Image 1 (cartoon, rainbow, N blue to C red):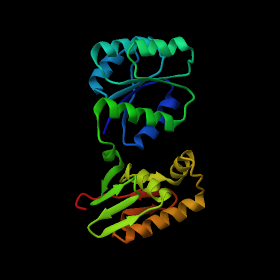
Image 2 (image 1 turned 180 degrees about the vertical axis):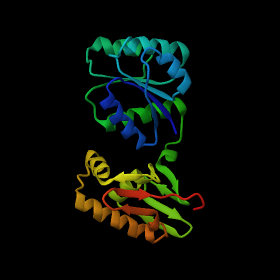
Image 3 (image 1 turned 30 degrees about the horizontal axis):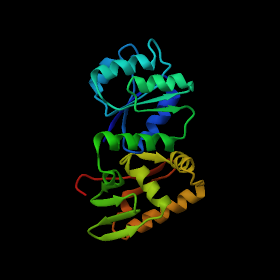
Image 4 (image 1 turned 180 degrees about the horizontal axis):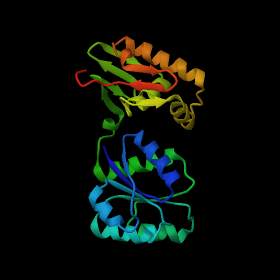
Amino acid sequence: MFKVLLIEDDITLYNEVKERLSQWSYQVYGISDFGRVIQEFTDIKPDLVIIDIQLPKFDGFHWCRNIRSHSNVPIIFLSSRDHPSDMVMSMQLGADDFIQKPFHFDVLIAKIQAILRRVYNYNTEAINLKTWCGATIDYEKSLVANDKGSVELTKNEVFILKLLIEQKNKIVSRDNLINSLWDDKRFISDNTLTVNVNRLRKRLDEIDLGQFIETKVGQGYLAIEEENV
C-alpha cells in the first residue's frame, strides 16, 4: 500500500481526495501543523506528496524546496492558481506534475499511477489483483476465483465488490455506494443498486462466497473477511 501525504488546508477537499484515494488502496495522510511540514513528512515517510501552493504560514513552493533538500519523493502540485509562472516554478523546484483545480478525479489517479510506475517500477497487475476470503479478484478481468471455481462479474458488480472489500468488515452505506458509482459515470439508482448487489451475491454463491456479503437493513452493505477463511 503506497502512502500519500496530502498537504492541503482545505479540509473539504482533503477529505474528498482522501476518501477517493482510499478506494484505490492508497494510505492518505494530512498535515496537523502547517508550521512543521518537514517534521511530519519525515515521520510519515510518504511514497508520494500532493501539495497545494496557497498554504498557511509558508506556501507550497517553500515546502517543495525543503522536501527536495531531504528526499527525491515524487511531488504533485494541486492548485487553483493557473499562471504559467506557477507551473514553471513548480517544475524548477523538482515537482513531477502540476494539476489545476478544479480537476477530474480520474485525471489525478491516472497521474499518480503513472508517476508511481515510473518511480517505483511496480507491477500494475498487482494493483488489479486482490485477495479476499481465500479468493483472488482480478479487477481488470472482472473475475473472482477460488478452489470452488471462478465467476465473471459485470463491471457494476466488480466495482461494488471492490468498494466493499476495500472497507472490509465495515458497513458501506447505500448513499456512499450510489455516489461512488454515480461519480464513476455509471449513473446507478437506489433500485438498481439493490438489483446489482443481489446479482453480485448470487454470482458469488456459485463459489460459496455470497454469505460474506451482508445486508445491514437501513444502513448499507458489509463485506466480511474472517481470519480463518
